[in-house]
Amino acid sequence: MIPLALPAVSDATKPFVTRLCEGRPPHARESGRVKSASGWSLWCGAQGLLEIGLDAESLVGDVVLVDPIAGRADRLIRARSGHNTLLVTEQCDQLCTMCSQPPKKTHVDRFDLLLEACRLAPEGHTIGISGGEPMLHSVRLLSMIEQVLEERSDLSFHVLTNGQHFEDEHRARLRQPLYRRVVWGIPLYAPEATLHDEIVGKRGAFARLTESFAHLFLAGARVELRTVLTAQTLPVLAELSRLVVLDLPHIEQWSLMGLENIGFARSRWNELQIDLPEDFGPIGLALDRARLHGVPARLFNIPLCKVPPAFRNLAVASISDWKQRFGSRCRGCSARHDCAGFFEWHPDELVEGVTPL
Image (cartoon, rainbow, N blue to C red; front, side):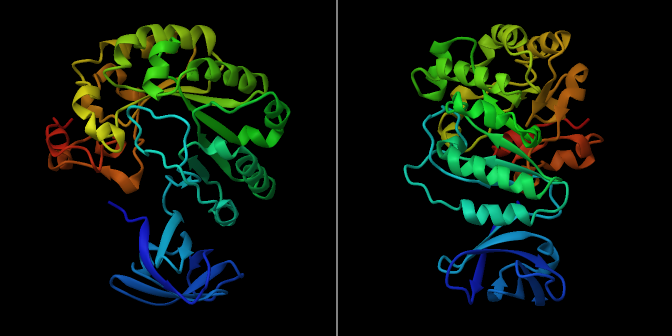
């Protein structure tokens, strides 16, 4: 597992963002390497000296948020990774049964620091935004996105949101050309209100989500629909696919996602998980219906050996590199390079119980 939070010591008196580089830093927002050894490195920039508990070779080019009081450096944007997501808040107004990031009541506003991090991102990067629910802080969030995209025409954003907070007032704003570089990833778990509201733990969520979809589509927003595959969603997947192709044909993609064994899902794993490929029938039907109607559909977070051959071309190697895991039997698999693998925290019996391709 790739460490994202590292021990750090700094001369600074308050949190700051810097990009770590070789040699003398070309501008004030960078820190140059002074020396490095196994397990630690020393950097120097406008904020003074910075010591981080990892060798420099692994860190050069990374954008880090340093908190000198907490004694840590968070690797917000790793230069050699395509999986960089900024956690903007841990607050949320839903309690999804399978939530991988259980919400907290408090919010630490780091938008100014995250703005600086985005400005330092490598060229051409897509930056993920997650929570909690980012749109609970829509004023700060949208301002940050717009400022970054106005300054950096090479960057784009993928924002995970529960879709509960889009209003009439957002339509004109989201019609701006720069929002063509923003994709909104929004979950939908059932074709009707009762089950969807039960899964997300919020009465009225389905109806509110329907309103938000109307605002987004009228604004020409790019929407990725997300459905986590669980014992709750599998029985209604066929009907949900009918709703998707009839009522939501303008989505950019429908992502059917494997369950992650962390957060709320860990204690409910036995009741929520499904047996793949044994239970693949409804999934295959949903994929076929979506593609038949011209709606792009993909499988995420599912190893290729758990997918029937006819659908393997739809399975994306999607698990972020810092939390991706393969079992011992995967070493000789011919498809490993294109495979999502497993989450680091998945049970050993699941990870080791694979049949290599």
